[in-house]
Length: 196
Ligand SMILES: N[C@@H](CCC(=O)N[C@@H](CS)C(=O)NCC(=O)O)C(=O)O
Image (cartoon, rainbow, N blue to C red; front, top):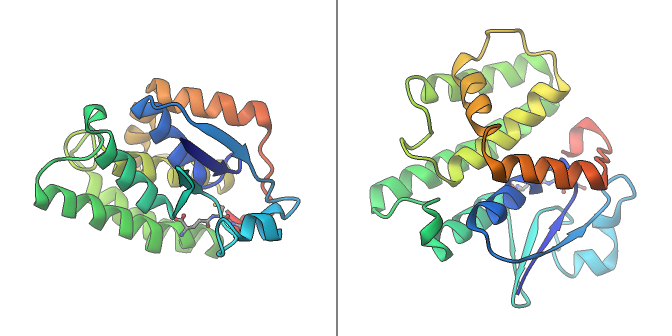
């Protein structure tokens, strides 16, 4: 049994999208960041870091977007979200490490710092439809952060063309639309720019 602990619109969207992509049944438990539910003892017992997402796999907890995406890609190969060969898997981990460590914190530092970081992603992505060539978990991770960036900061039109085209491709995927619909129905509850 899979249980996703998530907060609508937050980093956990990536895990939510990947769960819909693989098509496995799961339970979704919303954690309100605005009400600081992630800091309650019940949730800290699940994820001591006090952050979403967390994915319970038959009671064992997996945290961090990259770890959850890698797991879902590997555990459900029919969905083809993770390439088979070692080098391509290394590229997936490389991208997701870059996304988590460089892109994620950049937005909270303001537009200029964010653009500096996202320009690197834009250059890396240029000329490809998908991050690794074929669609993969790395696209889901990248998309969620870019979705949040352009929804919260005034990124100048045309500044990040490869990311814009990638965003458009992602917005045509049923799993993405389903996640946005499900999370919108619960209601986004962003607490502060810094936390998400
Ligand atoms: N490195 C973590 C970051 C997760 C993260 O920052 N989650 C935010 C929401 S986007 C959160 O739970 N913030 C609550 C808090 O920091 O109190 C990951 O990739 O999963």
